[in-house]
Image 1 (tube, protein in one colour):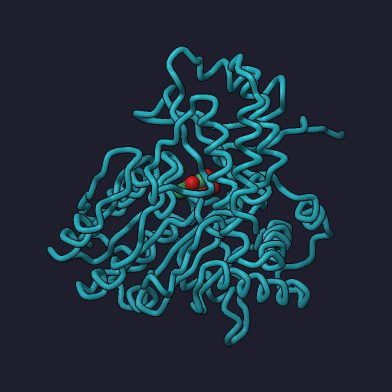
Image 2 (cartoon, protein in one colour):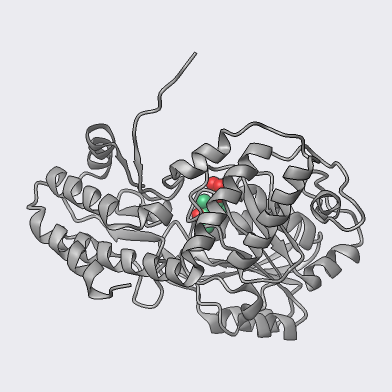
Length: 386
Ligand SMILES: *Cc1c(COP(=O)(O)O)cnc(C)c1O
């Protein structure tokens, strides 16, 4: 039986375009999870992940789950029942963290901002100063296209004896992520956003303060599968690798190849390309009357959220974009439903050609002249040469 997925240009909130090199890696023969070839690949993958996260944390690995599983792994290990946890909520993924913290029986302290705005750093710091065991924030809020400034937060957390726990699912390799510099204690990401691998793995990292919390917990983590001390028995080579669960071998091939591509480009160049792509697309979509939601300085480069002008039918246009042009963009959720489109600017999607295809198709479907928008896109890319 063979099947043939339709050709798609993935410019939504994930999954993002997967390069042929990564698909080829995925299709290589499966080996055993303790095969010396695979063990060497695990070591390489962990090292490339450390670079991507901006950390020297030994405990760095891909959790066998999607990004949401990375979130569960983070909370189940580093939050204990009864812990007071400050959580930033300014979109869907902050809401999810708050929901998951409630299920973990934490005392949840919500610090909120309206959808489309970053959290006020002083609000977060004031909440931490009242006492906290941990602070959870989303770095790149994919539901609104907002990037949370991280400066000052690490010091405030550590002065208060709180762990700083961060969702970097969308920002990783698409915008500076500097976990050690920011004083982040543990973080997770996903394979299918700026990394351009298929969905299914959650890059994860934890530093010494977080591991100390894990060692001194009063009770074992409630999840056996996500218990980091067990998972590290396999991922941490010291003292030999012990079977925990069968690693998703081929997905790790794909992630390793995706990380090699990141490494070949270099993080600085990759961040800068995402910034340029974001700015160019922003200028082009503005020509079609689609204005960015995020304010200057709060924008998430890998995800451009724009307001849909009155009279434009959200579902009809997105439907035609997919069926007639093979291009996927994302609608919005919560208070933004029907009012906002979210366009991925992730990895291979952050290039002039796919963006021009999108801009031309959108202009046609909206009954607008595409020329000014396509010109604005080209000018945007030319404005800040690499
Ligand atoms: C996509 C995403 C997630 C969830 O990842 P899944 O792979 O869909 O489980 C979590 N947080 C943010 C910010 C995301 O963009």
